[in-house]
Image 1 (cartoon, rainbow, N blue to C red):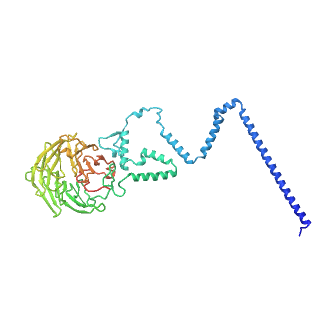
Image 2: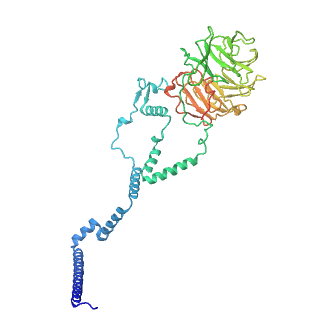
Image 3: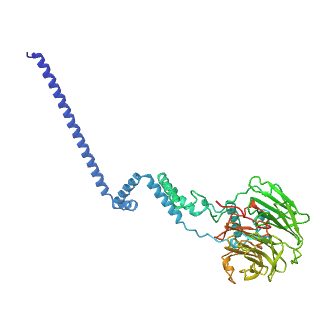
Length: 518
């Protein structure tokens, strides 16, 4: 069946309309392309005209542009460079700025003053007798100090109070911190982690276990409850000593009383007190086994033995063979066998600790100042007021060596470490010489390992602790005249004594006998 003529006509008319629409679209497209080409040609012509105009500038104008902008090529390079720098990450810009700032700060040179004031050269003295400055005097002779010395004194006091120079106050720390702050956050995180890891790997101790040795420099001090708070003395104490075997401390003084306290750092209860009638105590000391206490008086030849186990007080009015009007200074041997008294005119009297009878006497040229036993109790070391040091053999009571303390004209004190390594001699001028004990046994002129000159008055007391890590030296002429010296570096702990430990030192006997360091 064939389509009708009407249907074919409509179909032909539709096709002709579609072809017409397509032709119109093609015509519009060609028109748009021609318009775009004409626009590009106009822009190129305008650019060529402008470029021609730029090149045809007068010589004067071109010369000025070269002077101001550096020429066309250089000006274009600068514009390109600025564009590249804007496109770079911010961290590069911040780091470069920090480097520039650090370079500028580091390259600053001190400027020359515009003028010199003559008043600055005047050495002005500041009165130290003012009540606000009395605490900074080391002696009463310092009535006035210069500005520089007072500034140094203030800095020392501040460092004592702060426990040394803090890391944040050091210039090196500030420079390091400034360089680290210039980095971005990511770099800081990575750097801090790496630094912490390096610090962890650079140390081999004190991470899992505590240190067994005492570090030098700053001493970690914590004040506890007063040991004798249950019986405070109204007069100065002449003796403070720890018990050799128990956590007990003994105090004695001119109040004629010997007191014993249990030391725990919290309550410190009193154990007992023993009153000696009309007997101001010059010195009291435990025996080696800790069962007895020996006490001497101020101006008596009488001395007492207190038996702690039996509770008996035994007086000894006279020792046969010892013609002394007064017995004050004495020492008990480490093995508990001997009792040594310092007599007058350079005499040393050796007694049996068991029977309290005289074994023999030794004589020095000068007046006896101090005497100690060697660790094995086979020798006695003593010094005199003329600066001489004597080494005695206990069995024969003969002098086996003698030497003069280096630079000393008047001996004041003596101490020997428990391990027998160091012998210290204190002089009336405050100088403390530390010797190798083995050298002192044979040499006639031994040289000190170190001379401590931190005291300005006589070094009246010295004592080592059990571990031979601290040497305490003190003078009874001034308040707070005590120094703690680190062994074996022979350096003074800078933060001791602090103002909270303001005391008047009478004796250092028995100080630092107990304790370990962590």
